[in-house]
Length: 134
Image (tube, rainbow, N blue to C red):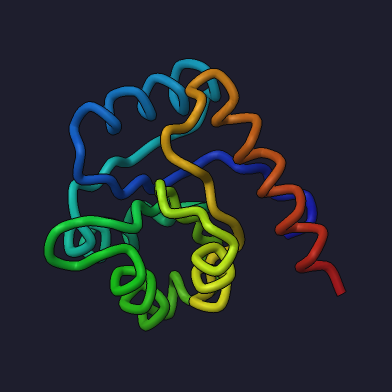
């Protein structure tokens, strides 16, 4: 795993405008293979067959929110250890600490910079791999 590169991202976001900006940022700028889901349930349905390296997950969504989606993803054996990064406008220290307690490896603040999003994810991925080493 130490040499695995970040390539496949499952992105869960209910806002079409944010999806569009992130798609450009991650596919065109970052060169990632991206699968976009509109809801937590759609992510649960798509994630096992897509087999993402990382899941980028909106916190506030109607129906199943980000934390609920993360909890449900963790119950799927193939995704129980897949790193999850939350994206949210709620980034007070206590909120970020709560997201990390839930199992997120990091939190990206909204609004995000589309030109640096892929670089940010590469940095998070490197830190994740470094921390996963024995």
